[in-house]
Length: 460
Image 1 (cartoon, helix red, strand yellow):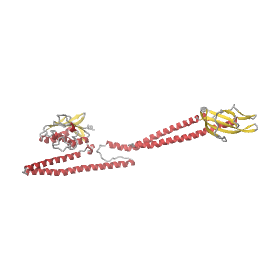
Image 2: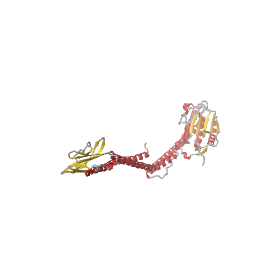
Image 3: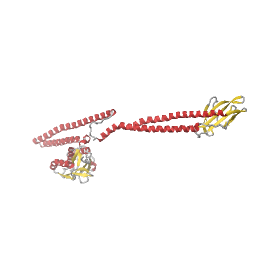
Image 4: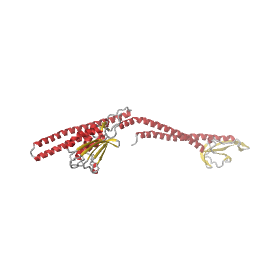
């Protein structure tokens, strides 16, 4: 798409170019006409001066060659002058015999173009009466001048005019560029303001702009308002769905558990226990869906992130998960290798990330069998940036499955309990914080998930 600056330059520059070309064409016509008219007048004056040099002696015409000369002001000593003087009978009195005469009878001064001795000439032919003894006669005078002088003069004028037009065009384009720059400044200011914002900052644009731009700003603000309302409605819908689903699922679970205690039929009791298990999984999935909805990276306002201690958040998440881990016969080990590392984060979402990583290792590290090993949580530095790593000593994941682990509802071992949303939530939280997520599963070493965060800016 062509930019506004380019379009303005084209629409401003193109008329100037056309006007410049038109000015050169019109200037060439006017200058050629004026210069040719001036040169023709000087050529006629030179021919008329010959009349004063002709006299009669004993009936014979003579020319006063002592004072005879032909020149024009336009020749400047550079052009060539040719002439021919004949009487009415065609007898040559002086000049060049081969000089061609006019194409029409000479009753008035006749101007015409001709060639002689390889020269392009502009000639004038006139006749005037002379007294020849007792008779009156006429003589014909032709004076011709080479045309290169007048053409050189026209070219000089055109060259000067072209320089003036080019200089005027450059000045006009420079002024146009300055005007375009100043005119587009409000749009650039709005663009810079939007680029500096976080991707999720949907606050209205507050800027003093010209009337022509105010409509655009109003449209953008209206779009942002509709997006904020849509996001709010989506979040509210997710919360309502979660609340409305968790309550009946909890009731089903409680009812199945209570009925199972009172039931004496073994088969029915097993069915009730299965219902209780399914209800528990459904409740967990609903909770995970709500967490996923809250952690969608495009809905997180990164402007609200604050510096938090990564090691401290890891320690709190481990403290919250340790009882559940011990009940499953597993161990939880925390290493704070780089105490004091601070990252720009939402502390609650960061704790959700760590908890989901711990829960994922707890449920899936053993593959199809319950895991009985240790889950390692570490806060560390990686390539100069703060990072956290959660790893296990389980069976690991094949390389083909590794790239699918962050997909929603994907589970490497479908027979194990879980919602298939844990690593999807981790991926969303990492993207919301501008962090990179790396999953590795070397043969025989389980799965290791590393989240590397951008360095938090120094205080002050």
